[in-house]
Structure formats: C-alpha cells, structure tokens
Length: 111
Image 1 (cartoon, one colour):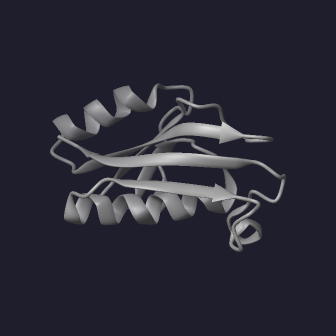
Image 2 (cartoon, rainbow, N blue to C red):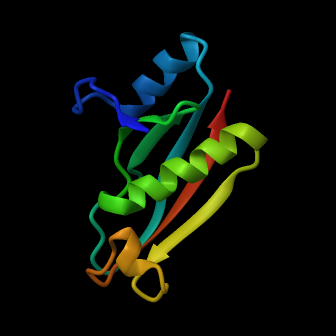
C-alpha cells in the first residue's frame, strides 16, 4: 500500500478517471455522513487501485488504511460496502477517531 506521489491538490475524481483510462481497476470511497468532530466533510473522496495505491482523503490516520483494505476487497468482488467508524465503536482508538466524531463511508468499484 502506498500513497500516490501525484500533487495532492488534484481532484481525486480526475485521478480515478486517469487510472481507469490507464487500465487500472479502481474503487472510490466517499464520506456520506459525519457526526461530531470529523476530519473531512461529507463528499470527500479517496480513490484506490487494486495494488493499494490511493489518492485523496476520507479521514486520515488509520481510518484510511482500513478504507484502502476494504476498497481492495470491493475491487476484488465488485460488492459495494458501507463502512462506519466512530468513537462508539470498540475499534475507534485503533482507527483514529478518538476525537469523538463518527463518519460513514461508501466504497464502490468504478467502471
């Protein structure tokens, strides 16, 4: 898994289109809802390819690692997933939302 070295100010949706045109399998993760203190607003995107490269952000820290892992599964089986991370979850401290917020992220394969 690696962070793509492209300019981080570029739109993740444009990156997804470029990756797909290059023949890469791509998934997109989108923040659907946030509650309380959340690092990224609803509508934020993270694009992921089958090799674990990613661009954009849905949260930061370990949450992104968990989303990348799920996205690779989505690419593999084609089944979209709704993920939820938050302080009420016993994994909240592990995935980095100990700030008290919660986020809901929808992950789907493109193409």
